[in-house]
Image (cartoon, rainbow, N blue to C red; front, top):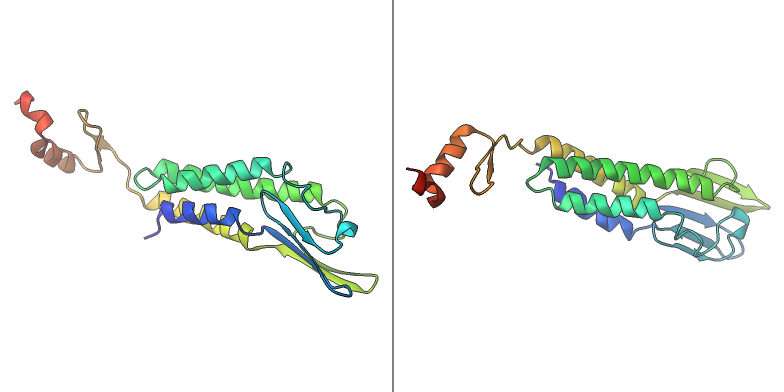
Length: 183
């Protein structure tokens, strides 16, 4: 059975992995990776419209949504609404990342999400990277987990414990001392 907690942990891990990657083969090579909190570049990639350190503020909304998604997923062990909200926020955070990436990288030829180009004899290719796909998968895990968690329909009015059946609540009432004064 999948767990919203597993999805939340994967979501937090995805923050520290690159979400988009670019390789250019020149006399050496050039590499660019975009994480949600930073852009890392090695080599000259200015011709593709991306500069190192420029994207931190651009992805602020996406990183907030992804962090909230991860926290809700981790907190969703007993509440299906947390898992559902975490999965939805994770998918929305990934969508915000895609839209922002498209806006920031307007100077790139073709599709910004996947592609290859050979400019001036220097082949280049780029793609959505492991962090992005891990975030999508962890969102789906949280959404599936929200379907598998039982609804808590009956709760103890004295201590707030929730149960899926009336019989479980009655057993709780028989065992708990806070109902003894009512007998």
